[in-house]
Length: 153
Image 1: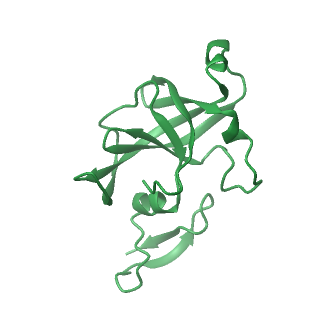
Image 2: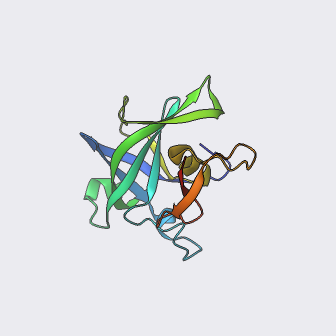
Image 3: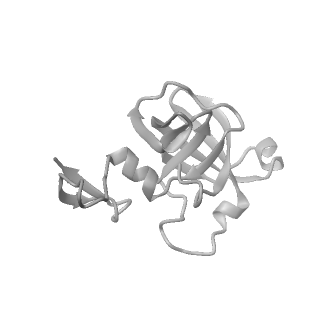
Protein backbone atom coordinates (compact mmCIF):
# COMPACT_ATOMS: atom_id res chain seq x y z
CA UNK A 1 0.00 0.00 0.00
CA UNK A 2 2.80 2.28 -1.01
CA UNK A 3 0.72 4.37 -3.38
CA UNK A 4 3.67 6.43 -4.56
CA UNK A 5 5.05 3.55 -6.63
CA UNK A 6 1.97 1.42 -7.30
CA UNK A 7 0.94 1.17 -10.93
CA UNK A 8 -2.21 -0.60 -12.00
CA UNK A 9 -1.52 -3.58 -14.22
CA UNK A 10 -5.19 -4.42 -14.83
CA UNK A 11 -8.52 -5.37 -13.27
CA UNK A 12 -10.18 -8.48 -11.90
CA UNK A 13 -12.19 -10.21 -14.64
CA UNK A 14 -13.21 -13.38 -12.75
CA UNK A 15 -13.06 -15.02 -9.32
CA UNK A 16 -13.37 -18.71 -8.52
CA UNK A 17 -12.73 -19.85 -4.96
CA UNK A 18 -9.31 -18.60 -3.91
CA UNK A 19 -8.26 -17.77 -7.48
CA UNK A 20 -8.69 -14.40 -9.17
CA UNK A 21 -8.05 -13.82 -12.85
CA UNK A 22 -6.80 -10.39 -13.83
CA UNK A 23 -7.06 -8.83 -17.27
CA UNK A 24 -3.69 -7.16 -17.90
CA UNK A 25 -3.34 -3.85 -19.75
CA UNK A 26 -0.99 -3.81 -22.75
CA UNK A 27 1.08 -1.08 -21.06
CA UNK A 28 1.83 -3.44 -18.15
CA UNK A 29 3.22 -6.01 -20.59
CA UNK A 30 5.35 -3.50 -22.47
CA UNK A 31 7.63 -2.24 -19.75
CA UNK A 32 10.47 0.20 -20.48
CA UNK A 33 12.75 -2.06 -18.47
CA UNK A 34 13.65 -5.69 -18.92
CA UNK A 35 14.31 -6.02 -15.19
CA UNK A 36 12.75 -8.99 -13.42
CA UNK A 37 11.31 -6.58 -10.84
CA UNK A 38 8.70 -5.34 -13.33
CA UNK A 39 8.07 -8.52 -15.33
CA UNK A 40 4.74 -10.28 -14.75
CA UNK A 41 6.03 -13.77 -14.03
CA UNK A 42 4.87 -16.79 -12.05
CA UNK A 43 5.68 -16.26 -8.37
CA UNK A 44 5.34 -12.47 -8.44
CA UNK A 45 3.24 -10.97 -5.61
CA UNK A 46 0.13 -9.09 -6.77
CA UNK A 47 -2.08 -6.76 -4.74
CA UNK A 48 -5.79 -6.32 -5.42
CA UNK A 49 -7.43 -3.22 -3.93
CA UNK A 50 -10.65 -4.00 -2.06
CA UNK A 51 -12.21 -1.41 0.27
CA UNK A 52 -9.76 -0.65 3.14
CA UNK A 53 -7.57 -3.62 2.35
CA UNK A 54 -5.26 -5.03 -0.26
CA UNK A 55 -5.76 -8.69 -1.08
CA UNK A 56 -2.43 -10.45 -1.54
CA UNK A 57 -1.88 -13.15 -4.11
CA UNK A 58 0.85 -14.92 -6.06
CA UNK A 59 0.81 -15.28 -9.84
CA UNK A 60 0.32 -18.94 -10.77
CA UNK A 61 -0.23 -18.51 -14.53
CA UNK A 62 0.30 -15.87 -17.23
CA UNK A 63 -1.34 -16.25 -20.63
CA UNK A 64 -1.91 -14.21 -23.77
CA UNK A 65 -4.82 -16.49 -24.67
CA UNK A 66 -7.47 -13.89 -23.88
CA UNK A 67 -11.21 -14.37 -24.54
CA UNK A 68 -12.55 -12.04 -27.22
CA UNK A 69 -14.85 -10.09 -24.84
CA UNK A 70 -11.98 -9.48 -22.43
CA UNK A 71 -9.69 -8.37 -25.27
CA UNK A 72 -12.36 -5.85 -26.37
CA UNK A 73 -12.07 -4.27 -22.90
CA UNK A 74 -8.40 -3.52 -23.60
CA UNK A 75 -6.69 -6.44 -21.88
CA UNK A 76 -3.87 -8.23 -23.70
CA UNK A 77 -3.13 -10.99 -21.20
CA UNK A 78 -4.72 -12.89 -18.32
CA UNK A 79 -2.93 -13.50 -15.01
CA UNK A 80 -4.19 -16.15 -12.58
CA UNK A 81 -3.54 -15.24 -8.95
CA UNK A 82 -3.80 -17.56 -5.93
CA UNK A 83 -5.07 -15.47 -3.01
CA UNK A 84 -3.17 -15.99 0.26
CA UNK A 85 -3.98 -13.11 2.60
CA UNK A 86 -4.68 -9.42 2.99
CA UNK A 87 -3.04 -6.22 4.16
CA UNK A 88 -5.50 -4.32 6.32
CA UNK A 89 -5.21 -0.59 7.05
CA UNK A 90 -6.07 0.45 10.59
CA UNK A 91 -8.23 3.59 10.69
CA UNK A 92 -7.61 4.21 6.96
CA UNK A 93 -3.95 4.93 7.76
CA UNK A 94 -1.62 2.99 5.41
CA UNK A 95 1.30 3.47 7.82
CA UNK A 96 -0.59 1.35 10.37
CA UNK A 97 -1.31 -1.64 8.16
CA UNK A 98 -0.66 -5.30 8.86
CA UNK A 99 -0.73 -8.57 6.95
CA UNK A 100 -3.17 -11.33 7.85
CA UNK A 101 -3.13 -14.82 6.36
CA UNK A 102 -6.35 -15.96 4.72
CA UNK A 103 -8.98 -13.94 2.91
CA UNK A 104 -12.05 -12.47 4.62
CA UNK A 105 -13.30 -10.47 1.62
CA UNK A 106 -12.96 -11.69 -1.93
CA UNK A 107 -12.24 -9.46 -4.93
CA UNK A 108 -15.05 -8.16 -7.11
CA UNK A 109 -15.08 -7.86 -10.88
CA UNK A 110 -13.35 -4.59 -11.77
CA UNK A 111 -11.13 -4.30 -8.68
CA UNK A 112 -7.71 -2.91 -9.63
CA UNK A 113 -4.50 -4.92 -9.35
CA UNK A 114 -0.84 -3.95 -9.05
CA UNK A 115 2.57 -5.57 -8.59
CA UNK A 116 3.45 -5.39 -4.89
CA UNK A 117 6.44 -3.31 -3.88
CA UNK A 118 9.11 -3.71 -1.22
CA UNK A 119 7.07 -2.04 1.57
CA UNK A 120 4.20 -4.45 1.01
CA UNK A 121 6.56 -7.43 1.00
CA UNK A 122 8.08 -6.19 4.26
CA UNK A 123 4.59 -6.13 5.80
CA UNK A 124 3.93 -9.69 4.63
CA UNK A 125 7.22 -11.01 6.00
CA UNK A 126 7.15 -8.64 9.02
CA UNK A 127 10.53 -7.17 8.17
CA UNK A 128 11.51 -4.12 10.20
CA UNK A 129 14.33 -2.25 8.48
CA UNK A 130 15.02 0.03 11.46
CA UNK A 131 18.31 -1.26 12.96
CA UNK A 132 17.32 0.01 16.42
CA UNK A 133 14.25 -2.26 16.46
CA UNK A 134 15.75 -5.19 14.58
CA UNK A 135 15.69 -8.19 16.90
CA UNK A 136 16.01 -10.88 14.23
CA UNK A 137 18.88 -12.61 12.47
CA UNK A 138 18.98 -12.71 8.67
CA UNK A 139 19.47 -16.32 7.56
CA UNK A 140 18.51 -16.13 3.88
CA UNK A 141 16.97 -14.02 1.17
CA UNK A 142 13.96 -14.95 -0.96
CA UNK A 143 14.56 -15.84 -4.59
CA UNK A 144 11.77 -13.56 -5.87
CA UNK A 145 12.86 -10.56 -3.81
CA UNK A 146 16.53 -10.80 -2.81
CA UNK A 147 16.39 -7.39 -1.06
CA UNK A 148 13.76 -8.68 1.41
CA UNK A 149 15.63 -10.86 3.93
CA UNK A 150 14.14 -13.92 5.57
CA UNK A 151 14.46 -13.46 9.32
CA UNK A 152 14.57 -15.68 12.36
CA UNK A 153 13.72 -14.21 15.75
